[in-house]
Image 1 (cartoon, one colour):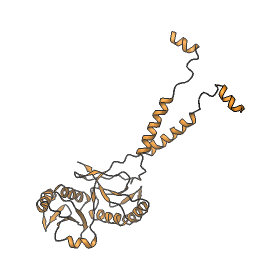
Image 2: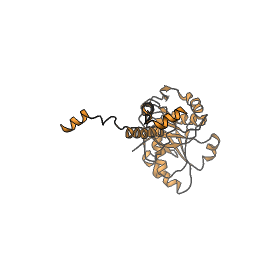
Image 3: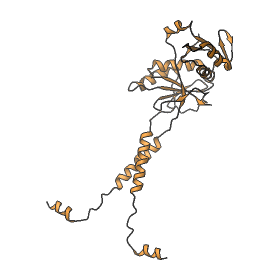
Image 4: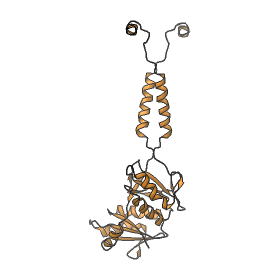
Length: 134
Length: 132
């Protein structure tokens, strides 16, 4: 009761101190700026093969998916096997990037080999096949 | 001069108004939160031999041939499970390249499996080729 009275009558509490809020928001902002990479995701779900001898791949790469039906997808669009080379060449013209192929377990093997070939011909830095750890 | 005196004498301007700054920072923050994707990819490196080097490597290499679910080494079907031991036996500390010929019916899953097993068997250089 006493406290309530005090708040009601007094004009001491004019403003809430928002500087900790601003500090926190700045820290969050810096975190998100640093971690953000603008990677175009393929936009299809594939069943990745499992493997043991794998390592972390670079984030700033070109992600191309190959589905079980043999479709080649980049950025939500079907580009087909012939679209890999121009796409990779265009993206690698500024700065060389590795290509990561997200292949489905049941994707045709020869298509995967040809895709690697096309990515190499498009002047990709390296070609990787994405896999899940067992 | 008048302004200067005004500043010095009065205590009116105690704080800079920072609310627009905070608004802007919030908008930036929301933008970055929305656009951030945490891409975490694990994978393995793959390579293809150049067309001219493929022939010269042929003799001194381990040549696997994938067809359907079978893995052939020197014409015998050895199966995926024996790839590691076969590579380990043939490589014996040397730097033998492994060449995987991918047949028409082979799946990517099998291909990745064979690459993985070869690497575990000690192969450093693994190349892929498409069988004719």
